[in-house]
Length: 510
Image 1 (cartoon, rainbow, N blue to C red):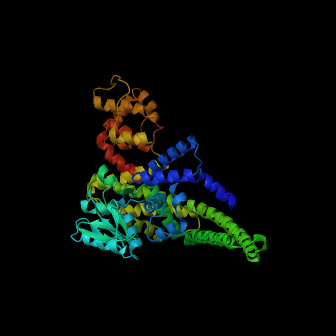
Image 2: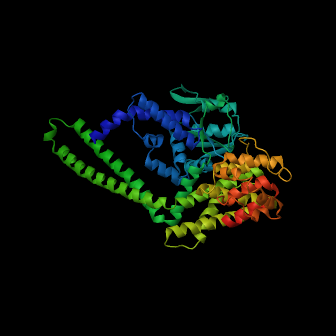
Image 3: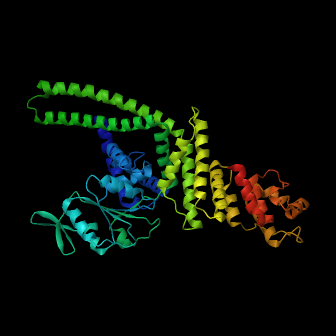
C-alpha cells in the first residue's frame, strides 16, 4: 500500500546504512559479537536521529525469502548465522573467502555451482591460471579450496577487479593474457583453518566471512533436522508458506506494475478509461485476498514456531555433545570428528528410539540414546587413559547446561585458586600447607563459606576422611554440598582419589 511505501521511504536510509556497515565489516566476526555490534550501530543511528526499522538486520533488508530457500536446498545450513553470511556474500563487491573448518560453506558452494559448471581447484594446482581464465571468459563460478594465509599474486587482478574496456568490450589482464570478462563470473575461496590471521594487504582484497560453527548456529541446524525427522509435515508446511508468500508478493508487484503502465500510457481522463477502472477493481480484490492469505500464513508460522520450540532440548543436547567432541582435539590432535559423522549419529538416535505420543518422554529417550550412542562410538577411537576424561567432560557440560554446576566451581576444579586471607593450619601434622591453602581458596566460592568457617570444628572428621582408603565415598560434615562440590573438597584433602570420585560422579549422573 501507499502507506507502507511511504513508511519504507522514511526508514530506507537508516536501513541501508546499517546493512552497508554489515556487508563491509561484519563478515569475520562470530555470531555473539555480530549481535553486539548490530545493537551498538542501532544505538548510534537512533542517537543521530536517522530513521530506521527497529529490528533492521542484513537478512530482513537485503535478503529475499525465495532465494534463501533455494540456497538452503543447495545445502546452506538453516541457522541465522549461515543465512546472514550468504546474504553478505551476495551483496558485496569483493569475492568471499570463507573461514570454513567444518566444510559447510564448501559443500554449499559446490551444490550451488553444480548447475553452472563450477570449476574447483587449489592454489597449488598447475593449471590454476588456465582454469581461472576459462571461468572468467565463460562466466562460470570458480571455487579455490584450502587457501592458506597468503594468496597467489597472480590472482590480484581478479580479486581487485582490475577490468578495463578494450574495443567496446570489458576485459581483464591475467598474467600476459587479456581475457574478456563475463559479468556472470563468480569466485569463491575457502580455508579449513579455524582461526587464520590474514595481513591487512590480503584482507582488503577479499570479503572475509566466518563460517565457523558456533553453539547457537549448530543448535538452529540441529533443530531443523529434528523437526524434519519428527514432524516432516511441519517442515513441508513451513517451506510452502515461504514459497507461497513470495509468490503472492510477486503477484501483487505485477498487478501494481500493470496499473502504473496503464496510468502512464492512458490518454484523457482516467475515469473514462473502462479498462483501467476494471483493472483497479480486480487489483483491489486481489490485494485483499493476498492480505488475508498473508495474515493466515503468519498465524500458521507462529503455530509452527511454537511446535518447533518443543524440540529445542534435543537440538541443545546435540550441540553440547558436538562441542565436547571438538574439545578432544586439545587432548590429542589425532581426535578429529567431522560434522557429517556426528549428524549421522544424531539422526540415527531419532530413528532407533521408540516413538511415543508424549513429547517430553520422546525428548528424554532421544537425548539418552544420543548421549550413550555418541559415547560408545567415540570410545572406540580413544586411548584408554582418555575415556574417563571424555565421559567426565560430557557429564559436566550437560550438568552446566542444566544449571547443576556453578561455572566458578568448575574453573576451580580445573585451575585451583588463591586464598583470600592467611589463617593458621589447624592440623599441620597431617594437613600439608598446600592442602590448607587449597581449603582457604574455597572461600572464593559462595557455596563454600560455611565449609571454610567450620573446617577447624570438624577437624577430627576430616582426619578420618584423609586416612580412609576410600575418601570419595565418605560423607562430609557440611551436608549442603552436592556430589560435584564434594569433588572440590576431595581435591583439597586427597587429590590422589579425584579420579575415582570422577568415575563415581559420571556413573551417578549419566
